[in-house]
Amino acid sequence: MTKELKTIDGTEALMEYLKQESPHSIGIEKKGFWDRKNRVVRKVFKKIKFTGNFHDIEFRSVKFIECEFKGVYGFYCNFSNCVFNKCSLTNSRFTHFEFGWYGVEFHDSFLRNIEIDEGSVSTMIFLTSFIASSNFSGLFLSENIRFYDCTIEDTNFLSVTHYELEEEVKRDDEYIDLLFEDCVINNSTFQETDFRNSRLVNSVLFKSAFIGCVLDNECFMMDKELQYDSFASIDFQTILKSGELSEGILSTYFKINSKTNIKKTVSRMTNQVKFSTVFISYSFKDSLIAERINTSLNREGIRTFLWKKDAPGGKPLEEIMSAGISSHDKLLFIASENSIKSKACQFELTAARKKQEQSWQNVFFPIMIDDFIFKVKKSQIRPIEYADDYWKNIEEIRNVNMLDFTEFTTDVYDEDMLGISLRKIVEGLSLDL
Image 1: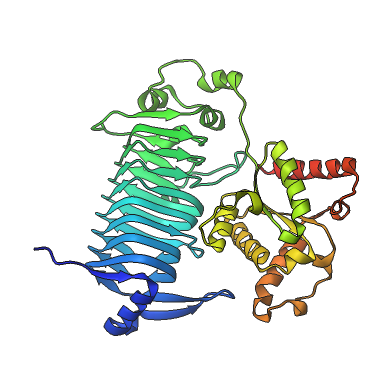
Image 2: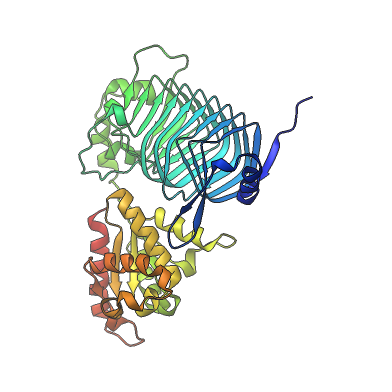
């Protein structure tokens, strides 16, 4: 008869367990102005079942052996230099790990219905593991993610690596972005992912698809006969974004046998599409101007997130804000006395500032509807314990050229002048995309 695993349900239960079993492995770290973070260090967990909410916790140099993670919701849950050996992870989500996962390894593990999103990952390795019905998405940054001898099924990789199309990308096999070596990848999709510093080595792609990706000939390497044939799909946008792929790659992986120049042919049929996505940060007291701007941007084909229109119900507010900022290219901040004093807006600014620091790409696009942002002093900020973080946000906004929309906040305004100012927003948002 198999012995039932000991169950630990959530962060509080885990910390209580450690106080009894190994108090030396407990650490406390000052996280910032929001809260304090629990830390678990140099601990070995063997045959433990984890379930429930693991929020605001860091595992550092921890080993999990034959453990089970089932129904776990990890919010601000970080792993650094951790190893999962012969573990099972099912029906769980790990999101908003703001300081990133670093040096995480999965050996001989089973992952099904796992989401890893809205964070940064550096050096994550999967060895002889099975991954199914899972999602890797919105990872800023993502570096050195490696899969060796893995089976990957029904899994989605969305916006995992990021470069500007015009940016020169140097391939570095020692510190690669994504590597799949000796893998079988079935019924999976790669969306809006740049492979110019990534490789698929001796890996099978069966009934899998590349959507809006960037590929080149060096992505694909094969120096031995594979057990199964590949059969993958590639959309028009991937063809247009990518370099000209060789006949061998088109034939081997995509079953395209035509000797015509595929990229040239496709370019005659359709244009490359550049999507602009914008999260609008504003105080509800300034809803009138926010809705005017949102409507105009939508008419121009720019996808936006406006809280009143797009925020889903039944989810934590901070999770909605963080996810929205992470999944959109720019944060359009409507600067006013109302928004500067708003705790929610300051949370959004902090999240965008951290994204900008990680991605090294400009995220902020502020406009002003009064001059409070230039008059406010750090000594005026309340609550006082938030002053340092709020002031960093204010200084970041001040450093960006702001369009002045002050005259468009009332019911009566010059529609022609508003149209000119809105056109400046559209042009500005389009420059870097």
